[in-house]
Length: 368
Image 1: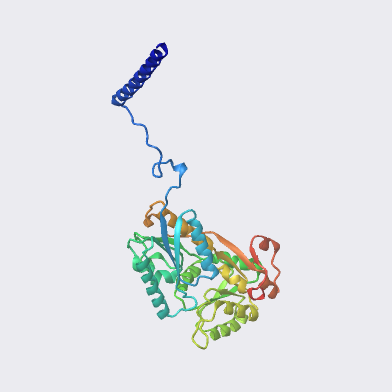
Image 2 (image 1 turned 30 degrees about the vertical axis):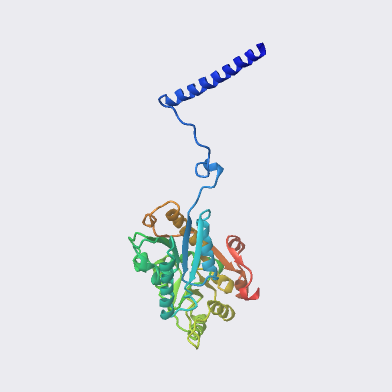
């Protein structure tokens, strides 16, 4: 009987304790300021460190004036993508190919196809490089809802209606003219007379204007001609004349020289013919010319152009900034590049201090 009585007492006490605990919890829940315990962490409520933060995927359409495997385009696009590194971006590329196909009919057709792609794909941002993509594509979207970022544009923004626009900004391309001529004179101090070669592309108009404006910064140098040349045969004739009328050549526009069939002669062929047939040193403004025989340049960096444009695009896409908040200005960094192969062919001894501060191209491209 005693064992049973003790068991009954223990059971009664346990029940009493349970009732008291329940009552206490109920009372606490009714007190002012009481807070319910947090729910268990789920996929939506777990701390940021425990799961990936969802990110938006951006659609970027790259419309290039020229062709995708040209090093100038490759460098720009690589720089642009570096500027957007870390963002989830789907890229689509459209090649206008206007360096190899320069007729007005081709440019109009390529521009229309690019605009059709914009309208159908509806990208979050359009990246356009070089002038033809502005003339035949971007200018049709000024003040539209789609942001446009450009690079390597030679003409003033006003030419395309970009100045004051709400949705277009980018990076201007301004050549290192004075620096390139000074590099040429470091290699060949005797240069005093320079002939400048241009094809008939409208993109050279602002380049030519800037060159003439800055020519006074080069005392002791006379620019004996600024020739616009239309055919490859005419180019060969002019180069023969320059051998006795000039000390050096400015190889600026070399893309639109027509052959006997009216087709553009590849610029690589133009430069190789020059290297093999001209005894005059020459310069340009772009590194892409040097492996094909041009002696030297202080190059406009395609990578720096693209990187600057990519950083602008990042500000627009990831930070929500307005395109209009970014000034349209050129990159300032240039890099000296020298063709040791061409120097040797011309019988020139390039000083070691010049070579140590320049990128040196030791072989012609066609000898590799």
